[in-house]
Structures are given as C-alpha cells and as structure tokens.
Amino acid sequence: MMRAWILPMLLVVCGSTVATGLAFRGSPGTTVALLLMFVLLAGVNSPLIFPRSIGALEAQRRSAVDGRPVVYWRSGCKYCLRLRIRLGRSARQLHWVDIWRDPAGAAVVRAANDGNETVPTVFVAGQPNVNPDPEWVREQLARSA
Image 1 (tube, rainbow, N blue to C red):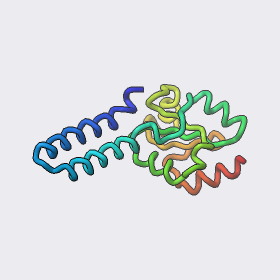
Image 2: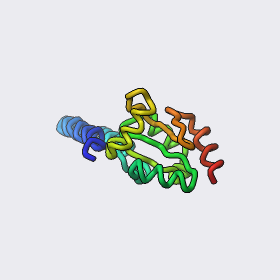
Image 3: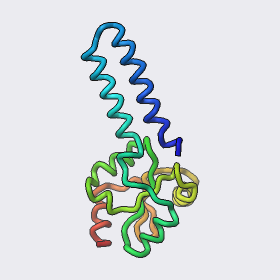
C-alpha cells in the first residue's frame, strides 16, 4: 500500500523544499504558486483520484455477475490517469484493481502481458486489452449495461 504513495510523497517533499528556498529569497507569490502546483501534481498521481480499488478475485466475480470491465492500474501511471480522466463519471462503474495493492491483480496482468506489469490492462469478457482507447472502454461499458 505504501508503494502507491511514494510518488505523491516525493512530489510534496520536493515542492516543499523548493518552496522553502524561494520563501527565504523573498518570493511569496512564486512560493505559493509552486507549492500549489506540486501539491496538485501529488494529488493527481495519488490513489485518491481513482475509484476505490478491490481485489482481483472480487473484481472478476463482480464482472462475471454484471458484465462490466475490470481495469488493472497502478498509481503514477500516466496512461492509467489518462484513462481515468477521459472516462469521467463513467469510471465509477468499472471494477478497478490496483496491482500495487493486490498481488493477485499483478499476477493477472503479468499473465496477460508476457510477464510485464503493463497497465492499464482492461479485461472485458475475460479478454485483456492493454492501454485501450477510453472511447472503446466506454463502449464496452455501455454494452454491459
């Protein structure tokens, strides 16, 4: 679980360090703007922007019942973030599995990607799709409804 917070914590620490240096030089406006930018970047790269993750086994079970896709992701992945943002509110309807929090999820992704943990990997009806177009995911979600 801590692994998912490494990048956001580093961004906040680095931003605080740079902002402190600017504050001692007497640039309060720049200091606030820079610190705000680093905190915003940390928030975007944190697990907080994604829907609550569930375990791979639970996601597969739920997907078998309701037919909705399962998205395997990890924090800090710009492609996962792109998918999440482009899906908008419909992202909450998908089953999200954080591979850094769930070893079974990481194993599923490695099995689908020749041993690599390439994310986002979206499973629709048991078929993996690596880094799919958000419009395609939205279409698959509409089909399952």
